[in-house]
Image (cartoon, rainbow, N blue to C red; front, side, top):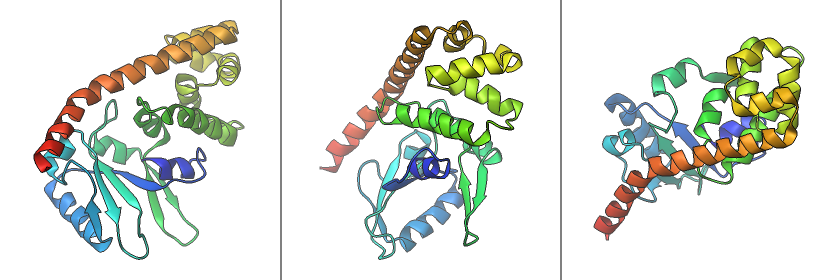
Length: 225
């Protein structure tokens, strides 16, 4: 669901770690513990690996020591702000097959974009690249749902103006988005302002979401010393 997924979608060239959205139930966590053991991985920060911490929305961080994955960091989460639960994510996942036959289950692109709406500076350029890469790959024969997705999430004024004028029918479904309304008028500076307002609101919402979780982490750090 993180940088590795962005690589598959064409939004990034590399990633130093691997992030997984997981189902937090006892059976699945037993499977996960077996995988972590096989990777010779250890928890490298608070919180410890537990069902409750995952259900509360924390990420659990591991560092692998197996020779074939030495030093790789693995992060797992079961709940994220504004993102659907695991069952919904799994139903609409993207499945790819590598050249060697390996199957990769990725968070769907719309869900990945939603998960990237954080307070971190690096995530917003990534959202822009993900949308632009998807548009570049599919613009010759897009589905209506793809067009609506681009209109709802595009973060480039020029692209949003182009989409708004090219797909008048689909625009109606996202006409309440201020950036789209400005794009229909062709006002690039107003589109940019609306996009900045969107980003600012999401960053503030993410900060508010993480405040109580950060307090819990600080309490866990103090208790571990």
